[in-house]
Image 1 (cartoon, each protein chain N blue to C red):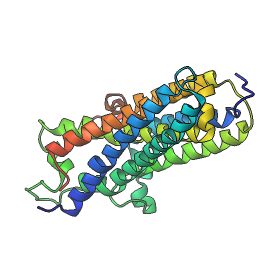
Image 2: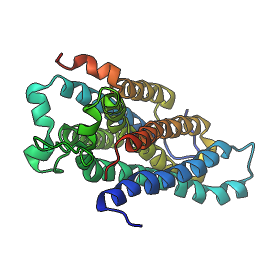
Image 3: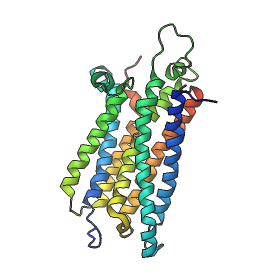
Image 4: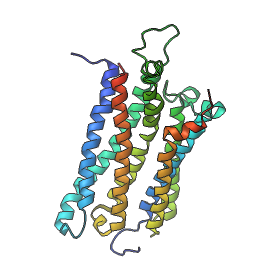
Length: 177
Length: 117
């Protein structure tokens, strides 16, 4: 039972950081949703603000780490061209996928979408984390901004979800190994 | 609107708008890359500047996106620091820009620009 370097980094990218991202999103969205003066007392706001801060900051940091690891470590292995005459394409996932019309769509649609849309997640999540850091407990008095945060936070999750879903499906069709 | 009980919203509005600008920049760069030729070659920052071996034009697209994002945020931050701005309007514009970013990074949209084989 062992992992190659490539499998290890693919696992860090998809499962490790991806799972952490989901966890942070769950905490962050619940915190933002309930941070309303009508729902919580002043003491309640003070109690949950640090948790919200951790959730949103971790989500932004993890989003950046995920795209950095994905782009600069895992992606070059995925897109590496196979030397001429190579018949076994199992170590060249992109070449393997596009070599067959039945699987080419995983690259031409799935990977092309995933590799770009993923970068919207850290941009969106950073704006959310910055705002929570900036306002802290005062956010409860800024309903309009809190609602905007919910929208950006959800969009960050949506971008990451598209990337994560296609990452998993592409890995199933042609793993980086 | 103006709130005397909280900090001014300028820096936060700057972060939201910079996110929109960064998203649009990514979408535009993705489309420009599909045109091929010199633009696509320039975007291969891995070959041109040694930034990430084997990443290809994606390296240029994302590095330039982050640059646009950071620079626009810095400019807006200093312009709106200590100010109360119309957040609703700024957020609406940011949301439109983010939507354009999503749209332009969707393959059926940007692949329209790819040269026909």
